[in-house]
Image (cartoon, rainbow, N blue to C red; front, side, top):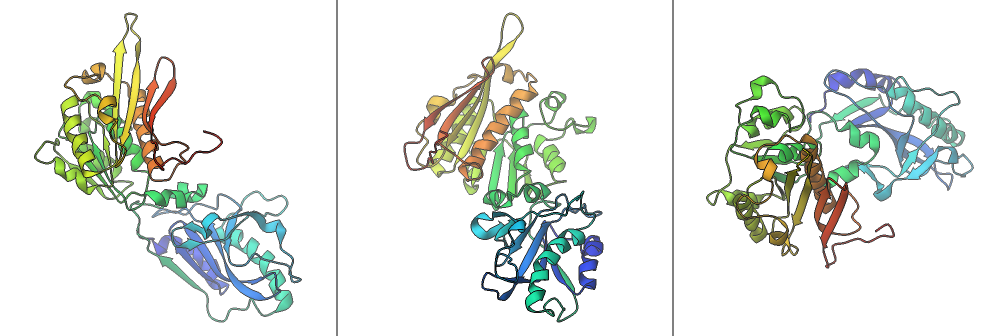
Amino acid sequence: MSAKPAVLESTLAPFVTKGLRVSVQGSYLLLHDVPVVDDKRQLRLGTLIATIVYTDSQISPPATHQVWFDGPFPCFADGTALEQLRHSDVAGGFIAEEVPGKYFFSNKDEGWNGYATHFDQLMHYWRIITDQARVIDPQCTQPLAAGSAQVEARKSPFRYPDAASARGRFEMASQKLAKLRIAIVGLGGTGSYVLDQVAKTPVNEIHLFDGDKFEIHNAFRAPSAAQESAFGKMKVAYFRDLYDAMHTGIVAHETYLTEVNVGLLCQYDFVFVCIDKGSPRKLICSHLIDCGIAFVDCGMDMSLSTNDQIYGTCRVTMARQGMSQHFFERAPTMEDAGDGLYDQNIQIADANALNGILAVMRWKQHFGFYAMNWDWHQMEFVTNTMTLVRSEKSEGGHETPSDNA
């Protein structure tokens, strides 16, 4: 996403007027060259960092009083730490990719009820830190040159900044998913919910494979609320256009995968298989296993009881290089196997959503976004007991057990 300097002008102008140097990197506003006293009573420079949430037309006021700091921990003029600032250390020394930070600060005046501007937010910490620096050098906050503001265009697959990751302080976790090329095979109920979740991550590309059209029944088991004009469009084109408003790099392939073109899947980092036919599942997943491509296969096996109640399971089966021998025992690959009501296009949006979300969470575990106590490769959610059954745990070195296992 390219930052829009015109939108940011009113936010950055007060800093420049005061002779300060600021920059915007993605979802962060950085106030540079902050004079700070270290624990040896020496003057050094640091950087204050705040989250900034903006679109093409507006900037939101600061959502919190808290900020980050990159530099030595600020001290009083006598070298003792300004503990009233301390909240926590930053693990790994980075807030986000290319945005270093060592400490997270939390301090506010008595009666504080919010900051109207980012200038007010950052200057609160500026005054606390530089008041001590001026004891040692009264001239240390005098600007050596005119103030400046720099907005760095940062490559991102999103149309607007990922304010959720920045505000929740988990951008470094999100970055573990960046640069990935993902494929979703099948854009029915489950596949569309997979797309809904993957589109909210910073993956580089999302490739959609389906040769079917979007019909009325699809609208009742897919995210969002479809307009009537959507009916009759190719599924992949409809969902590409829907999510293109948020995420770039979504590519629609208006085709089924066959023996002729299944080789296309070997170029991706991960594949979600969300189809309801046994023979295509066998073809696709066999090829992925041969190529050593990690994937998750989703499926539902629903039945209707005599008293008109639906029961069954939502299944997620994962395979990866070195852990795929279980797949054909766990996933139905014969023709017309399982998914009986699903084949009839029964409209159970919540089951589709759950199936898709379980698959996405397992994918995120695989790439280190979520912690993983044990490396399970088979999960089945049973609707009538509301239980999640797990099996096929890796016996290799991939699991990371903890006391909470």
